[in-house]
Length: 418
Image (cartoon, rainbow, N blue to C red; front, side):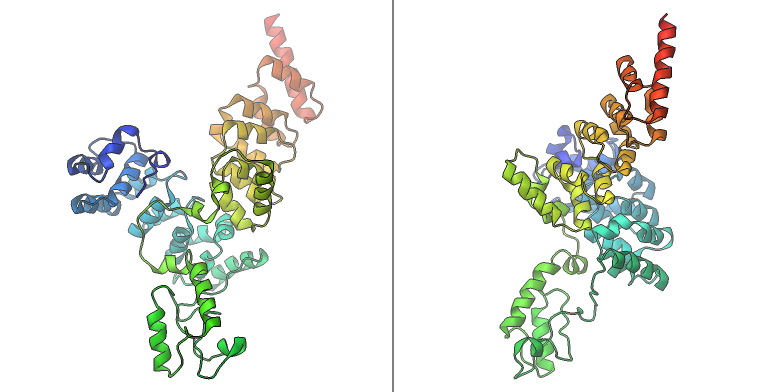
């Protein structure tokens, strides 16, 4: 297993202690908290040790996740937490505050979102209903939500109505037989219609492990093997590929590792590197063909070029997600803040990000962008340097309110110096 130490935020001085060949003593000290590490680093290192070869270390690491207080976990979790760690916490805990915290992170993977939707209750189920961004990113949350025993029919219908409006309502994956899935073939039946009109469904929950069960069920019914028909076999192969990250993931156990949602995108969308003009065009075409949910996911996982394209997307939810991802560099944030073609909500999101606002160039760009809401721009005018506030007072593109404020500040500063 390749451990992404940088992505996990694990300091260099602790990395050697986490190796499979390292002594168990220091590992157990890390797990016990004797070193008094920041919560997020403690969380990441304990997850790495869950995969340790030493049974004692592995057991203690797993116990840490199961027995730590909800407050401890909540303080350690953030949008920067690796998606597989978020998934593991959901496997180990059912605390509503912890699950609520995790469900607020757009960076959690599909499997995590669907598992939470299946068990949500109280305020958490309300969050599932209201989190439209997640519904767009993972429409199949609806399938788990409506099977949740805590959910009322009107709540499930509200989710369905939203997805229906977006033309993203998923087809049912019925536990007693996948709707629209492969059907057993009767002796003598041939062709497309015959192959999919049998009155009995073969129950296929995981086609990679249940082929034998399908064969047995067909035999008991006195039917021919569903795998002897070439047309059906082709369809089964397609279903295995399509179900790999959906049905199969939910019905199998947790897989330890560091795989994340970036795997579903080509590396040229998630890895930063220099591109030729043809590659840039190809990337733009690829993104243009994605649905809204895919674009929002990519906004949180994509590289600089992908973010640049997504910021200009016609759907404001996609563009806003780029800023919310926290992956934009300071220069990217400043370029976006001055861009007059971006949606106002994108500028609002930049202005609400404390990390970006620490940079003077971002505040300067927001003030000089006529699309920035006056109530936001006004708060930055007094923070500008003398030359910039003087320029702003003469800027005819910004609101008169902003230019007048700048002019007033120029006069006040001149009087003080005089």
